[in-house]
Length: 474
Image 1 (cartoon, helix red, strand yellow):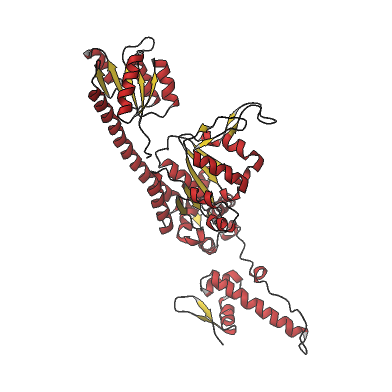
Image 2 (cartoon, rainbow, N blue to C red):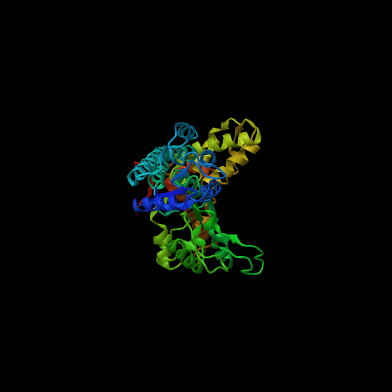
């Protein structure tokens, strides 16, 4: 929750009453805005972020009782205190039945008005806090339902709960496909801004020449093709959350303009001379280490510090493998529903293959793999349905040919030595990926266990007590 002054709407057809109430409330630390009739009041309720309405019962045109009913349709949780000149029971009863929080009677004392307003505002604050805490807890549970129950996901969920209630800028760091967008949306839904819009912007997809127009908007005629005025993403996210995705791709020139907007909390549309105040929370995400980029000069240090008030690091899927099968089952069920199929699960070999894979595309990669497999499978997903090629060990070994022929060593021997080097390196890589499991490494290399066991001895590899491996020291 932010600490802004509570904003009160005063609705009365008498200017003197509006001025008196405004003076009372301003002295009590409240911001005020005024309306002379019910129709003007409804327009302000639609447009403004309000904490309470002081509403006169007797007004020309739309009277107070009907205005109250309309206000409650727009925002049922907005407290309304009725202002009446005589306190007649039927009027007061009608107002309370229509949803009024309380009423004050003219002529009123300063203390009575402040007391009624404070009670209503504090009561609303308590209810919002309870709803907010419940929403944050539910959102954390929802995030675990979508991402898994590993220690890594539990930590991310806890971070979401911890930071959601604030207006801190949050920086989400993680490889492509790890779920940064999912976490950003969870923060928004668990925040006090959940009722506002969530506006996502792919910063890398905006050309530098269009950056200001996209984010800040433009006026009609500001440039060729600007045939009408258009608000930018900052204005579109008013009272909500602006998510700047892949911000590391933003050109340095654009970064300076963004920093200015964040610091001043205002934007100036292209072609305009008057800045517009913007009230939105900013979340950002990057698939690179922005701190390193800032140190290297490819990202502004001041912008990094402005965006990283709170940092959530989302690990790659290979670092929380215990969630792989949970996610696979979730994607399988969703795809079954989408395609109207009833694929029952995965074969043992398919499960092993999922757990072996390093998932360079992370959760997004896993999702596309399972969706394709469900499409291809009939009853059960088999290994061949996954379409996961084994690690091309020989292509990444990088064995270098000799730079010159050695004296008295025949070509056959040179080839034998090079082959042995490549073979040994391939086995080491397979053992690393299999975490020392020789049977699994054999399957990766498509050789039998007896062969890898003999090669293991031939190339001087030894098993460690923890199940890993090492190389014998000569």
